[in-house]
Length: 249
Image (cartoon, rainbow, N blue to C red; front, side, top):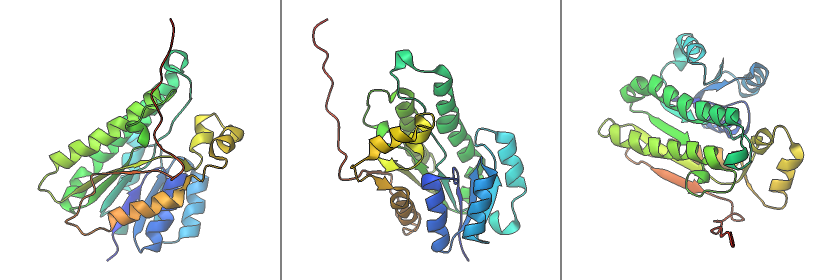
């Protein structure tokens, strides 16, 4: 019988690519996202193995209502992929928008933790798995990364904490920490500025959403006795930044 994955943030980028990768590997998928038109198009393309659940991960009431109305064949969730998340703004902390900070925390931290908590009983009962999408920004700080990097550090540490707390229950937990991936991520971060995205990725040979989706599937389909705790992945063109040194006063 096919296993069932719940993938958040499925209307674009890594989440959308992951839906197709898992369906192609004969999984059932619950795809969640805020944009009903995109979810409808995704379901139409992927077929009956996908159930679209429209809600914002920050809206717990809408999330629970969607879960209460899952078709019977999608109720046994074996894998949670916490992919929904975003970065907003690139300004240094003293010039940043506090509202953007709060949105990142609400989405990348609070909603992810709440989603995980909601599904833990099912995942424990089914000896399932959790894959959380963190970032290399969790480990390597950069100017303008401030709260975004901090939220991804939470995801990394939360994953390790879950792994410890779920000891002996047969649930696998993995933190995937990608570097540069060309998706809508940078467009969103820069308020819809396509040129900013094009400039960032030009000539860089970044990873693709499909690259990360294939990695998620590989982790998910490992034998049940194997756990990848953390997986950091970058394009060859990207490496670690040097320290900054301010000189003079």
